[in-house]
Length: 353
Image (cartoon, rainbow, N blue to C red; front, side, top):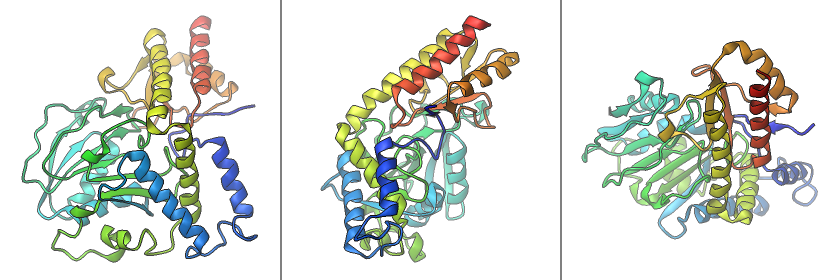
């Protein structure tokens, strides 16, 4: 049976990407596996260069002074690296969920952190509005999409200080003016590839400004100067990310995939709102196109509903423990057909109830 993969991450990848990456593990360069070749070989250097160029091209940042780096340690390491590279005295952070909360914790090790807004009191079910960002802050940090709670920032402030954004769960999913951002980071395992690499897109002019000495592995400038090859890169994760970016480009880029993502989200949220057996968690104005969080209005139906969606071949629908209920993660590679299957199951539950 076909599986409909709503997992929040590691997540669904395009079928053609899975097939090509699997073949590369068997044979990639002159009879050698992708995971056997030297990362200094021309074959892999070409992969790294292509992946970096594709990332900048799709984001519309070619020739604008940015570097695309493929690093390790996940977005969680970037919580620390951002502060090490940019925080001199004080930074401003918007707290919209678990991951921004953790980013704040790490940044506090290196300077004063001003939490300019938070939705913690409502279990992060909305994006704060009307917050003020001090003009003397070293940078402003936000999280564009909150996977656990199903909220998403729909707009970003225009600033005279660096704008830093954790886009781990919605990068490459919607059109934005990415040149507004001075540093973007994203774990690959949502919309780009397998776990193991993290994309960091940084405007080079903001680096090298802090007075502290930065450990080499945490220094963005070191990685930029070495073209993401300061140490052995995660070759499989980078290669598979490159294939995913090629797939996205072949579809028409971010503008094309955004239209598909809106169709999926519209179908999903329409069912949540119209079906009396379900209720959404996130504030309507802040709903994520990537992660729809919802629950049953009557917990007595849980056993029946769980059996039905599993029977339909649906995977990864359980919500995070922080929220409970259900979470439908609708990343780029998830087809509209999968969302339609889930909606059919929800409608069938209503008919049977």
